[in-house]
Image (cartoon, rainbow, N blue to C red; front, top):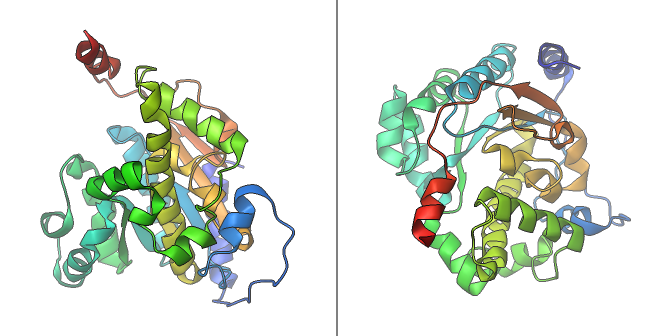
Length: 290
């Protein structure tokens, strides 16, 4: 099914759907990450509203443009999801909520709650869409400071004990998933990271994905859109793996990818966009090692 067909189908679902709260089944024969995620305290509500994971190559304006048009089509069909954004840190939620309530322009929101390291001009249109349609803006990312604590101290540096247990973070992670994350971290850093850095960085990536999943479960009854990098929305390694089992039937994963051999099995819908010109990201690693 193409993106246009998917959007048409979603619009029809939205028209027919209503909020429904379902009790979490007492006994579920699950394994791996499904078992961890299904035990979340937030998993008691299974939504009939769509849940979209919408990826990006952070600096690719074509991908941002296609994603915005796809989201606009669903919103104008009377869908009113919460918009969870990787670009805002969870410790800035109070500022983000205040800005969402009072600002009329996206730049006002960014000035109030945004941080460094993002090309904010690329995100202004989706923030403006949220303001225009009163879509709740949710800060979804773990801050760099918190990630540093996770890498040194473990998941308890960010999550309370109940969350650590609910998502199985107090146990060994499934080996196949862990191996896949290690490969992704190595390749994402040009195969130049010291080996002792790999697992701490896997833990940092995991903390982000668990935070995304936890917030998505909380907002699921009204519908959710996650705006995050393509690596986070991958079905095999990303947020999807941590979502409660009973929410997964509502999920559609959109990858907005450059033509670099990305596996189509990572996403439900794939939009291939032209590669954005940029310096070789591996050059910085090479210089640091010379």
